[in-house]
Each structure stands twice: as C-alpha cells, then as structure tokens.
Amino acid sequence: MTPAVRTTVQDHVALAEIELCGELIIAASEAYGERLSQDRIDEVLLGVELGACV
Image: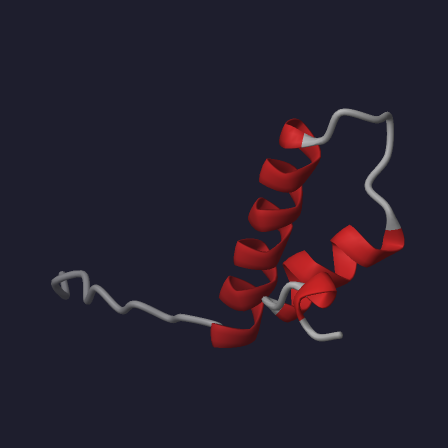
C-alpha cells in the first residue's frame, strides 16, 4: 500500500473572485437601501472611492 500524498492546489483567480464576492457581501450588508448602486459596486470591485477624485 502506497502512502497518501498530500497536495495543495490553489487557483489564484478563483481565490481572488471569492474575495471580491465577500467584499460585495460585506458592502451589501452595510447598505441602507435594498440594492447597491453601480457606483458603490465599482468602488468595492475597483478598490477606489469614486467620489474622492473630482
């Protein structure tokens, strides 16, 4: 019998997508309205505050 070999495979793209989904969930839970605005979604996904650059 051969010993089991542990391998760890990480899909960095999938992990990044999961992290972005988590950020969107957090933002949605903090939102006062029923839906996030497109601007807020862009802020979360792009990691920038859109209102700060005027």
